[in-house]
Amino acid sequence: MKITFFRLILGLAMLLPPPGRGELLFYNGIAKTDLAGDQAEARQTWRVILILDHDAGKMAKFNYVAASGGLKLFTVEGFEAFQTTQVAIGKGKTNSILIEAETGLNTNNQLVAQSAFGKGTNTRLTVDTGVTVSFPKTLDWSFNGVSPSLVTGAMAAWQESGAFVFDGPTTVSSNKQKETLDQAASSLRSRLQTLGYRETILR
Image (cartoon, rainbow, N blue to C red; front, side, top):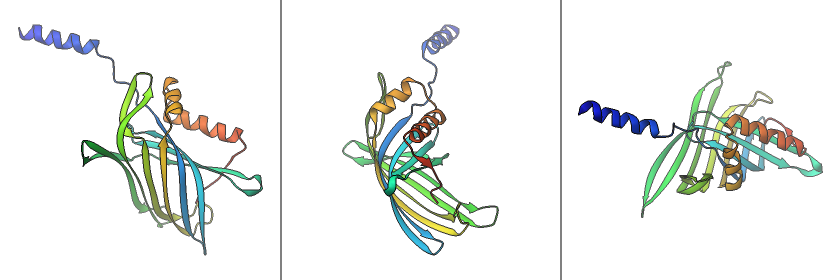
């Protein structure tokens, strides 16, 4: 009887589909960044495209702007180790919280500290044909930190806030092609360059 039961469980397990690749989620929105350092302060408003692989804890954030005089710029920020947790908020609703925090010293013994935080109320999102996930349709976003500027080397501090909305059509299209995060980011970078945007360094 034990052998028969084991064979039954094994047979059912073999009928189940193998674990799939985590689906990507795309978000669009606006973010405002306040930057201080090197004897100056500045504020910049960016359009943002966020590509999220929440199963792997990774995301790529594209910031782009069409400035006066026809200048078009974009930057890319990568997040490699964010954590996701669920918080019950009552009435059967749950928030997803995304957070990544880093504190340390660089090779020049200069402080590098930053924290990224996203929050939204879960709903059912269609990410592929017949596939849905429970995740926020809208993400409230904040990103703060201090580090040496990659441009001047002087210490710089920044505060960023924004709101991003789920992009269903782009999400479904990408997942139909079974794109990885790297492939999706590479495709978006090429598209922005084709539209005349030049990649630059944000800080």
